[in-house]
Image (cartoon, rainbow, N blue to C red; front, side):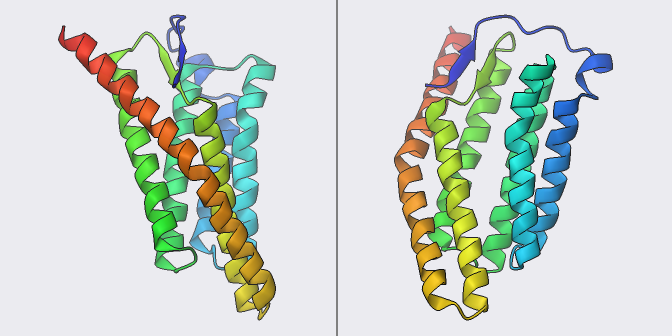
Length: 202
């Protein structure tokens, strides 16, 4: 299920909620990943995307340790994450770096999740909707799959066919592992959105 906070979030305060260390980290990670995605067919580009994603995984921890957690920060983080993921998928599709089936399904899951979570957030403005463990694991496996395929493309370009095949197989296995988790997570987002819609119509 989608994790849900029952506590009413504090009122948004632009003086304390915008310019925070976690938000700066989210933005920096997104910019780095976006730039890397443009040249994902190069070693430097792959390294930039990996570095950007790494920064993105740390911003939540920093927010909790510094006491700078906020719904605004969560929205910023989620929005930037979806944007950079869309950019990465587009560039990998355009440059034919990963199987179209993999890219298309990841894009579909992310799109449905974004629509459903946005609807839920609007319907339950006094609560916070966050991904559950299945969603987090699905994202991890999906990201691993994309990175493996990007590395495979670089190895292939360098004439290292055996290593490229190994990386490609790892990417495919990672995606297969992500599928049931992604289906479960997306189903919970849809169920949540439908439940809130029914309640609001009563």
